[in-house]
Image (cartoon, rainbow, N blue to C red; front, side):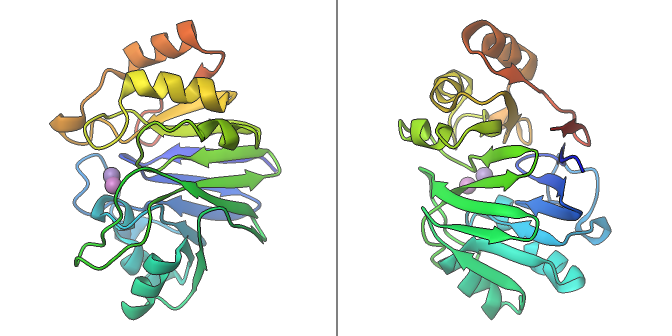
Length: 227
Ligand code: NI
Ligand code: MN
């Protein structure tokens, strides 16, 4: 069975692997880039990288409707449970856990993680999803950090990196990140949602091809990459 990664706009991705549908940072309602609403998506698993509203997104609504398993850091899981989410699995940075669809490992990210109501969302994370078809690294919202080299030692088939700048690393630092991670394929995220994070993804892809050994995969919203 193959693994697919579909971009749903901003930092929201749908991964299908091992017979499961996984949503990463499910932000639909109020997301100018989204083409579907939270009421229309299915999920077996939801992974939340950090507490900001554009990443926790519609987790409570979707989890409530689908009873999807929510995976996030301890502070966010504790907060979600207070909001009525029943099926949740808390992890933290550096920890791995084998699930029936693959293994999830939380990594560091340099960013914030305050929850929408001002609650403490712990430290922000990146997430490595290890599937039978290869390892996918969702960097989450982060600046460039040199320890991405250690994440690369996990053999990353696909790295999903923010390129929007302002809140996260921008295109130039993403090139440095790709060199540290050395993934086979890199997918850009967290750009063009709002004018403040507008980027020319085709120019970025040219830069990736010229300066790194990774293959850039610029997805349209709704577009899919197959591992
Ligand atoms: Ni954020
Ligand atoms: Mn964000």
